[in-house]
Structures are given as C-alpha cells and as structure tokens.
Image (cartoon, helix red, strand yellow):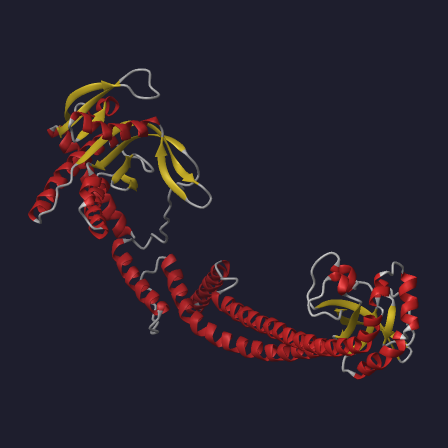
Amino acid sequence: MRLTTSLVSEKEQRRLEKIKKDQEYKANEIRFGIRKKLILLFSLLISLIVLGLTLISTRQQTKSLLEEKDKQARIIGRGLLAAIRSRLVEIYGIHAEKIKAFTSEAEYVNFYRQNEFIELLFEDIDGVKKQPDLVYAYVLGKHNIVLGHTRADVKPYSKFSFPAGVESYLDLLTQKQLPEMIATKIEHEIQEDNNRRVIEVLDYAMGISFKDNPQPQDYIGELHIGISLESVNQQIFMTKVNLQLVGLIALGVGVFVAIVFASLIARPIQKVIAGMRRVSQGDFSADVTVRSRDEVGLLSKTFNIMIKGMSILVSPEVAQVVLSGEDLLKGGQKRVVTVLFSDVRSFTTISESLTPHEVVLMLNEYLEIMTDIIIKHGGVVDKFVGDEIFAVFGAPFDHPQHPLSACATALEMAEALAKHNAERRKQGKKPIEIGIGINTGEVISGAMGSTKRVDYTSIGDSVNLGARLEGTNKVYGTLCIISEFTYEYVKDDVVVRELDLIRVKGKNEPVKIYELIALTPAGAQKEEKYVRELQEAKEKKKRAR
C-alpha cells in the first residue's frame, strides 16, 4: 500500500513539474518566429517581383501600343493633309488676295460655300472611316468652321464646338510653338445599337498649310483624328490578368519553397534557443549539435565553446549576464577635464621634401605611437586636425586623476618621440619635433554637429587655453607647457619650471604657465598604479566578453 502511494505521489509530482515547465515555456514562447518571418519575407518578395514585372510589362506594352497608335494617326493624318492640300491649293492660289481681306466669320463661310469645300473634301474624309480604331475625323477652316466630318449629323459650314479636353490647334498656335501633331486623351461618347457609352480616345490635331515651314498666319485650317484606345486597354487588361495568374502560381510555389527553406534554417536555430533556455535555467551541460557548415553551424559551435567556458568561470546559480552602458548622445554636460594639444613643429618644411605617400606614412607612424600612449593613460583622442592631436582626459568617461595622467602622457610622448626620431635619423630622415599644451578646467562635453554628422567633443575656454599653450612652446623653446590650473592638481607629483604670466582672452587675470619637466617618484608611482589597474580592468572586461 505504501509502495502504491509512493508511486502515485511520484507520478503526480512529475505531472506537476511537467505542467510548470509547459507554463514557463509558453511564457517565453516565440510568438512570431524566424520561420514565419522567412515565409512572410519570401511571399512578400515574390509578390513584389510579380507586381514589378506586371508594372514593367504593362508600361512597356502601353508604350509600344501607343507608339503604334501615334504611327497610325500620322499615316492617316499625312495622307489626309496631302489630299486636302492638292484639292484646295488651286482655289487658295486664285483667291489669295481676296482671302487676305477677310475679317469676319461670315466672309469665310461664304467663301467655303461658293467653292463647295464640303463636296471637295467629302471623298477624302469618307475614305478614312474604314481605318481600324478610327472614331472620327474632321476638317475645320478658319473660325472653327466645319469643312468635313465623318459624322453625318454634324452640320456643314457650322461653327464647331470642341469636346471637353480638346482645344483648337490654330488657337494654341497663337500662344506657343507646336509640333506637327499634338495628341490629347479624352473621353468620347459613341452610339452603338441604340446604346450610348463612353470610351477613351486619343485626339490627334494637325494644322493645314501649303508651306513646308509655316508661320501661324500661314495655316488655313486644322485636321483632327480620333483613335480609340479600347483595343489598347483590352490588350493591357489581358496582359495583367495573365501576369497575375502566373504570379499566383509563382506565389504558391514560392510559399512552398519558403516553408521548406525556412524550416531548414529555423530548425538548427531552434536547437540553439533550446540550449540557451537550458543555460538560463542553470544547466551548463547543454550541448547544441548542428552539423551545417554555415553561420548557424558556427553559432552553435561558438555557443558550445561559450558554455564550456561559462561552466568553469560561472556558478550554476548565475543564469543571466546583463550589460549596460551610458548613453553618450543624450546631450551636453559640464565636466572638469584635462585637455592635451600636440602639434608637429615645421610640418610644412618637413612635408615639402616628401611625396604625398611619404607624408601620410610619416604621419600615420607618428600618430600611431602617440595615440597608443594617450589610450594607455586613460585619455581619449578627440580628433586629429592634420598633424595636431586633441586629446581629453575625463570625458566622456570619468578619470580619477586626469591632470596627472595628461602630464604623464606628455612626458611619455616626448620619450617615445625621441626613440622614434633616433630610428628616423638612422634611415636618413628628418626628426619630428612637437609642442604640447595641457590645461585643466570646466568644459562642455557632448555629441555636437548636425543631423548629417555628429562628433563627441569638448568645447569651452579651457579647451581654447590648452590649444594656445601648445603654440606658446615656440616662444619659450619648450616641449610641454601646463597651466596653473593643471599645476594646482599635480604640484606634488610633477617637477616643473615656472615660465611666465600670459594674458588670456576671456579672463581678467593673467594665467601662470609652467614647463613640465618630469614626474616626481610619488607621481610616477601613482600613475603606474593607475595604468596597471586600467589595463587589468580592460583585460577583465575582455575576458568577460
């Protein structure tokens, strides 16, 4: 009985544990996984490709069909124009002087009636009716007087009213220069089997003249031809339908391929996720086996290596590691920092004897040495301005002894430069000489610039003074000058020589300046300790990654 009770309780316990694990899994379950995303991505991609092909194909087909209609209209129009000219040239030649004197619409109407223009042009106008897709054709004289129309209900010698969207070719000529033929898309109403319907028509308008290069006053009338776009629209519609059917088939095939492909990609990733979940629960024995030779395979291999390392360095109770960092782009902030400016002396003279390649090589070698020293002492290179270095100690990150580190940096830069120059002399190259200025004070640090480009930098009077001290070395023949503000912080840790008082823009009192000579034993020891701790912190951070 006890054994039975024990077995039941164990089963119940396992059931409860399973329910708990299922609940935890559902709480962390991926709602829209990579498999679904890949299927959706492939489907969208195929849809966009089909849509793009449909648009391109219909656009090209529309262009081709419209070009055919333009060609048809030109052939019909030029044929009609030639026929009209041949029938009217003699009449206009005989009555040329008389026509010049016409001033009213009635005079033109009488002239057209007397010379039977309608009868003369009837055969030519009637002959174009059989042209495919031609909706109408009509000839107008001066003042838009009807001289011929394919429609019998249009009264001869009446004043023609243009349909909506169409303008008189002759009226437009008075406003601007026109090509031989202008086309306008309009909606035109037609009668078919006692039913009226509206179709799209291209109205082609041409001027009538007896001259090859006529001026506006040389035109005697105008010709309009209407070409139906129904056949064009029908062909485009059928093309769209066919492409959409092909697109649906392609989409179906694409979705099937996407499902297969997404499953192949998602399955090994799901194995990695399962392994991560085990680690998050403290199980560092998790091992992910993915044999594919791709990024996922590399991910699983790296994951296994990482877990093995964590199993040695981290206790099972540690389930997560949270990394956080300071957002440097929130805005400017006031900081007390130490700035260091360094510049190469007579750089122009040195570079004049070098090729551009040699100049860049020389600068890169020099800046590499100086940059390593600045970083070693916890400084940040704010920017390079040609051969000038602007470094900041204390921004964007706090620096516990930034004045001393800046001084130590300057002295090490001088020592390293001496070694570098010795190598340059052996190679027959000119030595490099520099000047260094150091100042400590309040600055504004932050991300500055435009929406196109942003730099994290420091600005303020303290920065300006540091830059000025660098140039002041030329006056005193020194290598490094520090201000009294820096000296106040490091007076027990450095050996200096007092130089002078200088007047500084923005300050009422002159500023005392010093030549930096060396660190005291206590100062050197303090800086060595800081550099060592900084290096250890970096190594520790690197190992933690």
